[in-house]
Amino acid sequence: MKRTLVALATAVAALAVPVAPAAAITKSYQPDPDHTFVGLIGFYDSGWNWQHRCTGELIAPTVVLTAGHCVDNGSGGVNAHARIWFEQNAGAKFDGIEDPVTGYPNECKDTTMCAESDHVYNYGFDNFVGLPDTHDVGIAILDKPMINLGFGHLAKAGALDSLPTAKGTQDKDFRVSGYGISYAQMKGIYPDKSKYIVTVSYRVRLQAIEQLVNTVAPYNAGYNIQLNGNGDGRGGTCSGDSGGPVFHPQDTNQIVAVTSFGKSVDCRGDGYYYRLDRQEVIDWILSKAGDDATYIAAHVV
Image 1 (cartoon, one colour):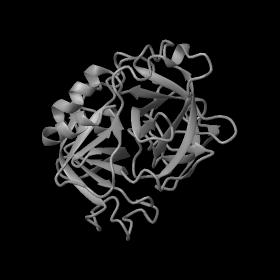
Image 2: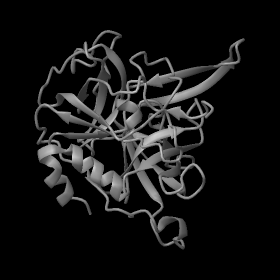
Image 3: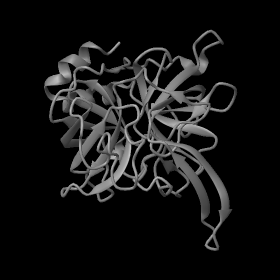
């Protein structure tokens, strides 16, 4: 397929927009002190060399949920290691080398707010092959439990199935959370016709409300939900928000999808989010969750 999809993972160089997957909270965003279990997650190769960053969220003491394109190493496998920081301002003081407060992206300075993983799993994401069913889900199993930050919980299978036909009485608002780029704007076009994009990333946890557009159009077809952040009091996602949670109802901790991709390199228009409310996805998550599978299963509602 053509590279018209923009994945929302991003590299440390905050001013560089990646050529593939999606997202950061844009437009009418707010700080997010509410979802303390959402973290800034970085991925590394076998030598702990930095690859890129995304957003991830705890759904159990050792289980971090994220996007499949985040854990993917681009060579048919997964990244060997991950490190996740749960501070709201996880990378805010990053100076190009390291954040002196949190250690991002090189270490965990506060081990009550940061953990590492050597066990990373991919649901089967393969560069958006199979769209709309891109299998864009990933898991990182932490080397120690994180127990004081709270957890998100998975929605039951089919939780969103009634939304396309709801007659105005069903809640169409969703809340997104993440650490991605907060501003992206096309400033020009290079001679090779590539776009010159200016971006700003604060590397802090932000949240915004989006509204449902569609669940059954060709890019969705029951596998993705299509949301839009335009309008008063709403915001969208951009590079770095990939893997972040989509909550519905928007004022709960129920996770129905993870941030997956957009169709614009400057984060305009609709965003697409890979649905978790499908039994096969829930079963895969449980199969990788180890000792925490019982906890996750008990909190699927």
